[in-house]
Structure formats: C-alpha cells, structure tokens
Length: 378
Image (cartoon, rainbow, N blue to C red):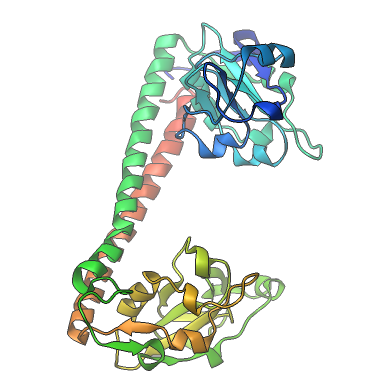
C-alpha cells in the first residue's frame, strides 16, 4: 500500500456468517440443489484460493428449514471450531453455496475486494482469533472486531495483482520441483527397464549378495535421551533423518532401508536413501554398504521402484526383516552402467538442491511482500 490506510473494523464493511448443521439425509450431490461445503472439504477441494467443486448439496427447502445462509461467490470462508482451525485453511467461494456449522464466512461489502481480504487473512494464523476453550473456537464478534487497513479499491487491486504474480512464481517453482522428482525413476527405466519385470534380461541376484550388512552396529536412542544429547550428527530412522545428536555410529557411505512401518506398503515417501559422512542409525532402518557388486545409488533407486509387499510381514505393524530384504531379487547391469546412472543421479540431486534454495528465496520474498502489502511499504 502506498502509505498507511486507516484501520477499519471488519464488521463495518463486511458481513460475518456462520454455517448450519449438515443434514445427513441429503448427503451427496443432487440436481438443481445448492452446493454445501463441509469443513473437511477445505483440505481436499479447490486450489490454494478457490472452492470450486462441491461433494454435497441441499435443496432450497432444506436450506430454509435449517436457517442456513446462502453465501454469495466471493465469500471468504475458514474453519472456526476445533482442530480444523490449526490447518489455517482459507478459501474463496466461486459459486453460491452453504457451509456447515464448523465454518465461518465473511461476505465483503462494496469497500472490500474478496481477494484482498483473502490475502490479508493469509498474514494471520487462525489460532490468533480462537478462544482458549477446549475445543478452541472463533467467535463471530472476534472477526467482526478485527481492525484492518482498507485502501481504495484501485490500491487493493494493485496489491492483489502483485501478490498473485509473486504467488504464481512460487507455484511454477513447485511444479518444476515435482517434475525434477520424477527424473530419477524415468532415468532408471530409460537405462535399465522395469526393475520388477526385468524387460531387458539383466542378470538377477538376491539383494544380500550385492551388499555388506551392518545392522549389528545400529542403536536406538529414546526421544527424551536425544533431547539431552542434541548435536550436529543426523539421527536416521525408517523414513530418513528424524533428529540430530552428539556422537555417531557410522562414518561411511551406506544405503539405509526402512525396516518397519506403514510406509513399507503405502510408499508415501522413499523407503531407501543413501547416507554420507558421520551419522547415527536406530533399529528401524537396515544399514548396508558397498561390497564391490553393485552401486548403492543404483540399489537405492531399484528398491524404491519395487513393490515389496511380497517381502513384508505383519499387518498391524508391517516389517521388512533382514532375511526377506536379503532375498529380494535385483537386476544387475554392468557396474560401468550403474556408475553412469549414479553420476546422472548426483547431477539431478544437485539440481534439486538448487531448486530448493530458489524455492526458499521465492517463499521468503513472497512472505515479505505479503507483510509489506499491509503495512504501507509495497
């Protein structure tokens, strides 16, 4: 904003509305019915700003019986009760809709652009508005009494345009990061084919013959003890670094493979990762090192691309024990080809590091712009 705009009570330039209870008998979408957003939909529907597609609806007759307000497009909505507040989700309705009684909506008046209000809310943690009750809740009067800067509409539009442009750069960077994450699997398939099907007919050996196992050196440390032993060395578990401690157990490059946990089947994160330098490993990750038969970076990619369900035991607590890990069949291309793959992976990871640094800079710039926008410095 060019200069400080006067502060105005939000309730004087916008209408604050709470939602209504959702009638169970009308779940699901119905033709010619009013879209109905539940608080849980805010996490799964729409992009960062907009709520676009409803999974539920109610008839106008039911809406009137509930006394539910039909919120117009442009209403800014957010959770108002319980744990949902901590998600800090804010959305803009792109269509007339109703919301459930865990959601609050702010309908901007003529002096306020909805996207300006959305960006302004982005500078606030919703918990700052919440009571100390259990569960926490946000009162209508608290939102109404919030005093906000309200420049003229042209200035609001300028601020929104600048922030949207900066935000778009962040999204493009995130998309580039996602594409980079797919490069290693694509490179593996390009150089070696499908690791499960062995489409190119490489020799096959059990994993245990390709590495030297060092599980015997692992040692777990309780969280309370780690808190008293904070240090510079990474402390690894089944899914990567979980802490930093003083002292280390290993001082070499090793491949770590998750030994237990739901991720062995869900595969929401890699189960294998390469550790370098000095570090500590607990008893939830296998530790293997190079024995001259296969490159560790190659083995890491091969394991991360394989479905290991046939080698995992237990349902309540999935486990990949050492015996089953050792018998997993692994295709074994020539070491020279594995080395070429490892070099290209290093280049891809270096690109990822550069992108992460660039993304961090963009995030910092955006947050700085966001706060400057509402303090008269943008």
